[in-house]
Image (cartoon, rainbow, N blue to C red; front, side, top):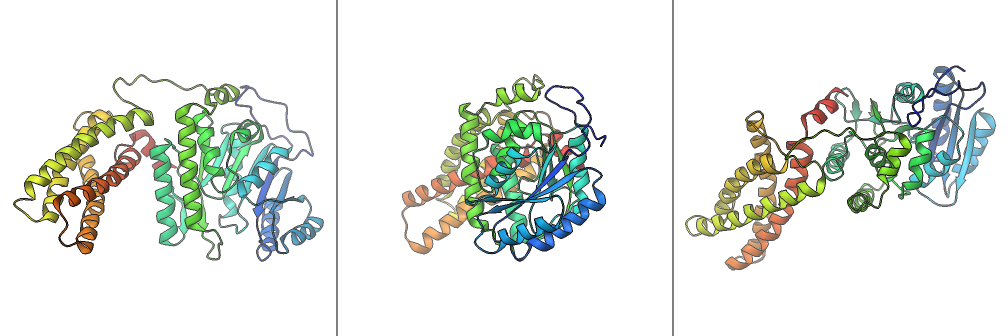
Amino acid sequence: MTELAVSAAAGRIPDPIPTGTTVLDVVVPGYNEEADLEQCLRRLHGHLAAHVPYAFRITVADNASTDGTLALARRLAAELPDVRVVHLDQKGRGRALARVWSASDAQVLAYMDVDLSTDLAALLPLVAPLLSGHSDLAIGTRLARSSRVVRGPKREVISRTYNLILRSTLQAHFSDAQCGFKAIRSDVARRLLPLVEDTGWFFDTELLVLAERAGARIHEVPVDWVDDPDSRVDVVATAMADLKGVLRLARGLAAGTIPIAWLRAQLGREPLEVDLPGVPRSLVPQAVRFAAIGVVSTVAYLGLYLVLGHVIASQAANALALLVTAVANTAANRRFTFGVRGQSGAGRHQLQGLFVFGMGLLLTSGSLLALHVNDPHAARLTELVVLVAANLAATALRFVLFRGWVFRPAAARALEGSS
């Protein structure tokens, strides 16, 4: 073999990969996948044998299956060359990947879901930038413009909302955290894996966030994806676990308990500092400014509501007060929180801000309606308490949408649009 893997950490070209060395290790984690495993392995093995021009291995990581998955995997491994089986006594996709990747001798480590929802034609484009040394990790993305995806609206909304949350809270710039189609250089994995705490579905996100914060280069490959209608993933439970993971990771990054500086030094990827006076780029300063503007906006909103409530109906007073303060709030956050100056894009920002206002209106008006249904004669003080609570929820939603959508840096939007 003559493929070269360039070490980003050392900045050098290593010796050529010796003949017979495993270059690519593709992990297929599975729990109770007896029905789908054989078709998956035969199809994957056939594709690798026909299209991958270097030594490969397929590793089936059995996640404590209780059906015949393990026995079937061992039978197929005995029949198909370059297939091995690793059994784990505990469940968890992240646990399985960390276990196999940590022990693998391959140059590039990859994984894909057993349902093979991703078109395998994207495998070589996924791996090539890692072998060339251009990138440290590679991910399939279902959210690029050129991706072709077949899945239900529920999963589509959840996926896009989750990635919006990641951009807003963790400053993530990758577009699709949970696509089951990823690869990483083994030298990078050895440095990152000891710091990844999650053993379940959040493993992917945590790995990517740590890699990005450490300056690792993440390559994105648009994929064709057909969702598995028989997927047994509990979407609600997984979403809740992911949100808990986001909070844990955000706390660790804010507190400085995650050794990002050490990781950067290990990977040789020091940040490129650009001086942008008056523009807070990190989450905490932006959140502080947003909160301060939010307090002023809330006080103004309540004052307007009290004044207007004496002359028009409660719902109309709420809508008008929220509209006026929303326009002012968007303008203030544009200038002071996200550092956007000048008239360029101001109209678009206000239109997007009005959309965010509409979502806030649904929250506040819905809470007011629920109050009046349960207590038609609710006192004005009770109305104010309910509206304050609803506005707190609307404020949190507004910050997420402002940071991840309305005032997201143009460079990041352009990068995503070209992927």
